[in-house]
Every structure is written in structure tokens, then in C-alpha cells.
Length: 374
Image 1 (cartoon, one colour):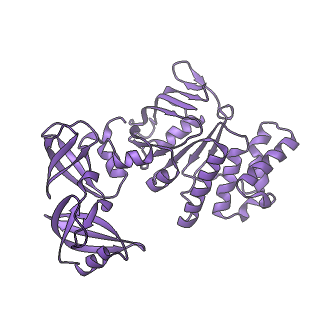
Image 2 (tube, one colour):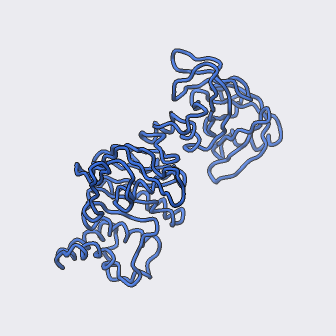
Image 3 (cartoon, helix red, strand yellow):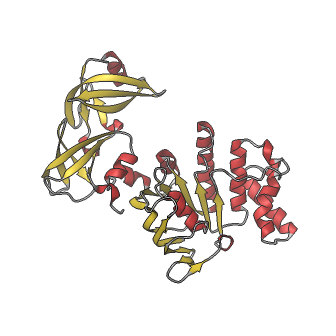
């Protein structure tokens, strides 16, 4: 449905570094595809280039087989002819219009007949459960309702591709979760190819069929959410996709199975590595909170057993986070608040505790892999 080849864009007025650096992607029809990364990584610039709101310096963009941009062929199809719908982070709702007038605005610019406009507006508002608010003035809408109006306006032209630029970032946590479900359900109902931009990994994982992680304008990870979380190929991807401890070390052994042994400040650890490494290579080991467990008499240890001291706790509702220190390094773990493990940890604050690291689930990545192309 959408193909990008060698896309590049630099904003010379602010920096000479490319906002998008030789990016190539293929996005299948009817898929929900997310561009994920920190602020300034190039994800919104990529989306705006697809929409025709930014002029790339190089590359080609195809939408549904149609060439909409090519620097080499000097092709640049204007936004209104690309058959895309777009929802901006700010929603861009016209305050002097009603809900129906906001949704109808794109169709009036296309010189549609009044009866066609009214039918399309009714259809779009029903999709987002706002049919009863058609005549409501825009200033009287809540944040969630404004978001739905912006979504209806993007869908009213029956676009080929829907582009969403951090549409939930202005909502509170509960409403954000609700709208996340509604957007995914709507995308599946319509079978609409959707490209979503966010810096929130939870949002990306919950919504997406595939995720592309961007860093400094380049693609560093690409795959389904589970694959890139479980086996990231780059140090940046491993660090960005999961909160946890990062240990610097070097390879002291490589097995034919791909398992490697790493010497770290807390001892020798072994795990898989997402890229080829040689003995002696500098690497980073990422240990996520869910891969630590307290060793008790009733819980058999799985992985490397270590002794440390519990330094602090953090209550997060159904989850208890805890920090254990070993050789000056602090590792973070997570347990269910009312589990026997949590009860033991609460009793051991400031005292020694035995814990284990599930080594098979740790991630090893080359120390310089954060800028490698995915």
C-alpha cells in the first residue's frame, strides 16, 4: 500500500543533520504500522513527507502504486490528491464551526454536492459515535470529543491511507487508553492502512501490526512488537524499548548456537545477541525488570543466582518495583504487589537478598549498534 525508497530530509535552517536519513519502508495494505522513537528522531517529518506537507530532499514515495513523490523524476503530487487522511497532534478543530461543519470542511473544498457531503458526514460521525453531536459548537467539546471529530474529518473522504501524528498525547491517561482501543477497532473494521506516530512504546505495542523504531533520522528496528521487544538488533532499540539496567561488558565466549558469554561488573553473564559479535567485542547487556526474581525456598531459581541488597521499593498499584544492588550496580525488578515474593522483599529492605537473572531473556547488543540501519 505504501512504499518509501531512500527518503531524506534536512532542515538547513536549524541543523545540518538529516531529520530523515535514507529511509526505506514497505507498509502492507490494511496494516497498522507505527513509527516509534524519541522526540527529534524524524518520525513526524517522515509522516509529513508522506502527506505532502514537507518536501523531501531525496527519495521516492508510492501510495497504492501511485508515485506521489520523486526527487529524481521531479514528481510531487499535492496533498489533496494523495488520498490520505491525517489527524494532527493538536486536532486543528475550527472553533467557529459546528461538529458537522468541521467534518464537512474537506469535502466542501472538493466541490462535492450538498447531499453527498451530508451523507458522508453522517457516515463519518456514526463511525466515531458522534452522530448525536452534529450540531454542537466545537468550543463545547471535550478533548476526547475533539479527537473524535478530527478522526471523522480524516475519514470522511474515504482515504487510502490514514496518518495519525501522536493523536492521543493531549488526553488524560484513562481516556488515552479508551481511545487507543477505539482507534484499533475502527482501523480493523474499515481495513484501512494506518501509519501512526508516537514516542510511547506501550501505545505502539498495543496498536500495531508492525513497528519501526527510528533514531537520528534512521531506521534501527523493524518488526512485529513482540519480535523487536524480545530480540532487538541494536543497543538503542534494546534501551528504548524496555526500562531496565544497562551493563557494559565485553564478549569472553561465543557458542555456535549464537549464545554469548559477557564479562560485566556483576560477573559473567550469558545470553543471546541480536547481531554477530566476536570474542573481545564491547557490548551492552540489558536486564529488564520482569527478568529478575527473588529466590525463595518454594521458588526454584531459573538462571544466574546472585546475592545483593534491597535498596528501595516503589509501589505502583498492582505492581511493586524494587531495586537490588550488587557490586555497586543497581538492578530493578518487578513483582505483583500481593505476591509472596513482594512480601519477602518488603521485609528485606536494606538487607541481603538472593535473586536470579533469567539469562535467556536478557538482551546483548553491540555497544556501537545504536546507529546501525535496521
